[in-house]
Amino acid sequence: MQNKNYYITTPIYYPSAKPHMGHAYSSIVADVFARFKRLDGYKVFFLTGTDEHGQKIENAAKKNKKNPKDFCDEISKTFKDLTKILNLTNDDFIRTTEKRHSEAVKNLWNKLHKNGDIYLSKYKGWYSVSDEAYYNEDEVIDKDGKKISILSNSIVEWVEEESFFFKLSKWQNKLLEFYNQNPNFILPKSRKNEVISFVKSGLKDLSISRKSFSWGIKVPNDKKHVIYVWLDALTNYISALNYPDTQSSLFKNFWPADLHLIGKDILRFHAIYWPAFLLSADILPPKRVYGHGWILSGEEKMSKSKGNILDPIEIIKKYGIDQLRYYLVKEVSFGNDGNISTESIESCINSDLANNFGNFCQRTLSFAEKNCNNQVPKNYNFLEEDNELLNSFSLNLSKIRKDIDNQNLNEYIKFIIARSFDSNKYFNDSAPWSQKEKLERLNTIIYVSLEVIRKLSILLFPIIPQSAEKSLKSLNVSVSKISLESINNHEFLTKGGSLNNQGILFKKIINK
Ligand code: ME8
Image (cartoon, rainbow, N blue to C red):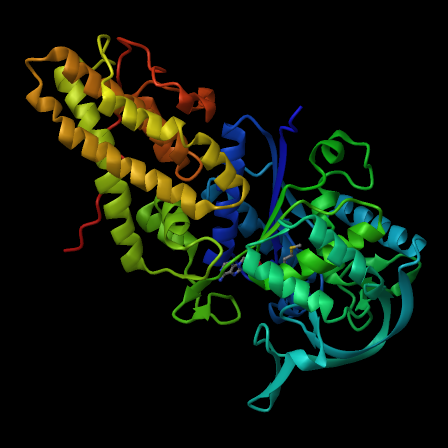
């Protein structure tokens, strides 16, 4: 039998400053996938949270004259609050300062140690506190008298200290074998090639403890060291499933994860270090790591350290949460970098939401109100053009499922836009207002249009849940009862059922 469980995660974010649009983007997209899979009958576990240890957080707390735990409590709360504001359906919110997490990390450490993959030595090399990452000599260049990482442009510093190492080099061939056997482990394809060539170029053992600061989980049996924040952070994906209790129903049902959705900036950690740690600990690696592109501001990545951030809360206050969710999914080509701006959000709201889907709902429902006694028509007879429109949904259902399983979000939204466009064209071409003498035809056009509102609303539900709920309410369909499969049914709506027009779905933005 097909496994109907689905585990999806976002990165756990650093609470070094309050969340910005980049964080909102990853979380919203993950929520779209989670909602889609639930709609398709899956039992979903959707995880997000905050990554609270390490030098970056310790420094940020110092700068704010707070102790690190108080500082994290405060900022982690803004991330948790954001999950509500973004209307996320996460099932858990993990904080790495929780006991359930630190116990899991220590346990994993002991397992790696027991399996002979940890040894004590000395680290000598470059480290970026901003990325919490070690860089090789050939990944660092001089810029304005400072050393920076070529990959992230962040400043690196020279570190020389005693450190525990993980035998990453030992796992190089096993990793290459794993990528080979699981060709879709890393998506999109372009990023997979980057990772593979990095691994092929030779993996060095990885420093997995630091001694020069104290904010972190202590190494078991050597309290002078704190565990490297990435080994700590990556473990969140299993600590939230009750690891080390691998017999717990959460772990058994949901591990290995179906999808770690991350930004391309942290692919190396997820696609190389994480599977290596897991293989070493005799745990199966996740099934998929998808590294999406960046939201840019001008030419640059939007980031707290660059100070070029758009505040999601401001945008939501101005335009609405569904508007933002829709805009990010539509405007940023998934997998690639994308620019966003207030001008383009306004034109997206007007052209896609108000003039396309919103207009179709409104014209159908107002027409039914005036001409069909505000009821779902009873007598109808589908003609070829009606079947063509209705079937354009059902015939594509397996493709839609496949697109989502491959994170082909661009195809999914393209499909919805094209069908909304077709629906408006159908309404125009069928011209129900000219069929007042032929009631069966008029009723058929309205029945088909109402069915199409239902189908479009179901497909849009993962992206714009509040608005889709409203349009379904107009049809007297409860969101708690909707399923993706029901798109195949062209006569779902009860004949003679009353309609309940909820009014305009999306206000047009008019700038005076
Ligand atoms: O890296 N565009 O946390 P972080 C798109 N704690 N996405 C962006 C973005 C942008 N401009 N800026 C950030 C960390 N993101 C670690 C992760 S996971 C075990 C530990 C998103 O707060 C994107 O998903 O720096 C990116 O990977 C993540 O936020 C980085 O968040």
